[in-house]
Image 1 (cartoon, rainbow, N blue to C red):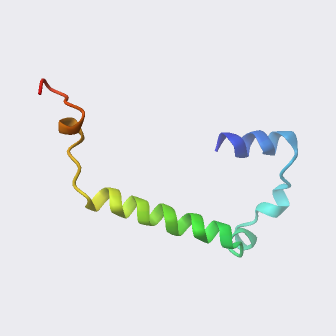
Image 2: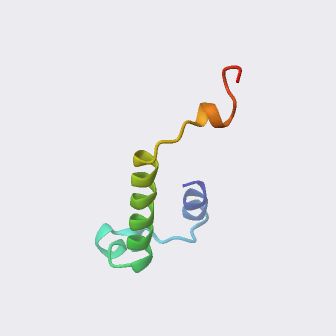
Length: 59
């Protein structure tokens, strides 16, 4: 998000190019959506006891 705002402030990104209808036609946007959805689903469904793995709370 920071890189996006930085490029927007520098004028490298034209705000007319950022219309939602045009963004959804890009394959890279759909690829990012699919990857992030799969990662989120995996992190929700896979039980990980992080406290135990990092030896929190004593042992």
